[in-house]
Amino acid sequence: MSVLFAIACGSDPTPTPVVTIVPPPTPTARPTPTPPPTATPVPTLRPAPARESYIPEGATIAVDARPPDVFRSPVMEPLLGLLFEGAGGGAGFFSEFESDTGISVRSLDFMEMHLDFGDAFAVAMTGGEGPETELPDLGIALRGDGLNEGDFVSRLQQANPGVEFKATAYRGYRIYSGVGQLTGGFTFSFADRDTLLLGTTDGIKAMLDVASGAAPQISGEGMRVLDSLGDRDFGIILLMPDGLPDTSAEGGDAGANPLAAFGLGAVAPQVTVMALRFEGRVMRVRTLEFYEDESVAASAREYNEGTMAMVGSMFGSPGIRALIADTDIRQDGNRVSYTASVDQSGMAAILDFLSFFTELASAQPES
Image (cartoon, rainbow, N blue to C red; front, side, top):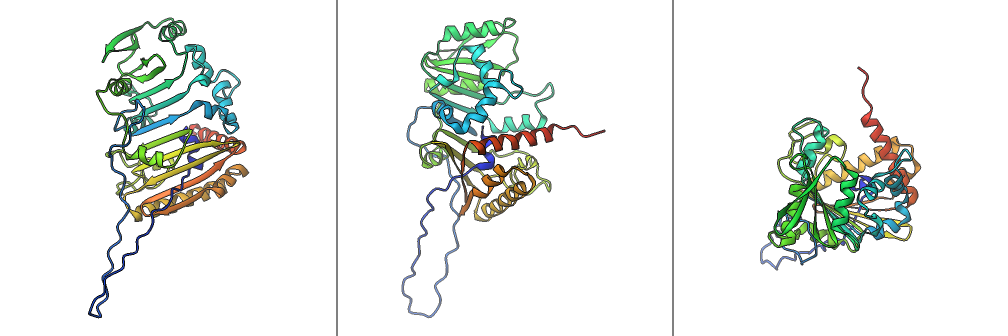
């Protein structure tokens, strides 16, 4: 979902107060040296207050959400229509999931997910094709009353008659996988009677490590900064890992964004957090990015402002133009914040915008 909201991201936390340094009196006429400016440090991973979560410490992409608040919002109706009914009028992803598992997504109380950014980026760069392609480490936790392990396994067995799901023990839990599937393929487990884990084998094991107390849950500065944005119904943390290849047009520039090939900025923030809050008929979007230093943040802000202005002029949708015009972008030291509000018509405009560029990207050039 983060892609859907990237065009209208934003947050504007309270700016850090500027401390004026008053030099002591000096008997000479020499001017007091001005201390060099110090950039706001990039967040470091320090322990945060305990919170109930199965997301492991060190996750490079983390998402949490409260489905009841998301599904109740009229802003989400255009997107939910696609997820339940599908673009062509058939069954959407949510409908198929409910049919196969017997779990109503609207009945869930909480959802969280972790994903390895480096692995996901590698899959995106290859298009997920080729015999060497492996699924990125992924773990999803779904919580809600009425989840039943036996019923879930039985429904999956009926929906996949050619696959036999068998359980293996791990730290006192059962991890189910389909016989014949490749290592790292789809697996699931129950952390407790109300919590279903879905994902890859390694992704689920990482969450069960947390559930069993063998590994710490996410508690770094990324989560602390996300919490500082206030109450949220949907939150995202993205930590840019080291060692990703540069995909910028120039190539080789320090700090170049490996996502530049997808038009997502010239310089990658080291830490990004986003919080969505549904208030009546409006979705408040707040995003905060941390860069290496103030000069890099300034370059990123200017680039993103220019990109948004270009998109607004090229794309004829009044809804997209209004969203871009109303997005507030500010810089404070090495931080860049974005604040925006999206209503139902704005969400429909975002979906049209994404559909347009998806079709554009999938169009094959003439030989």
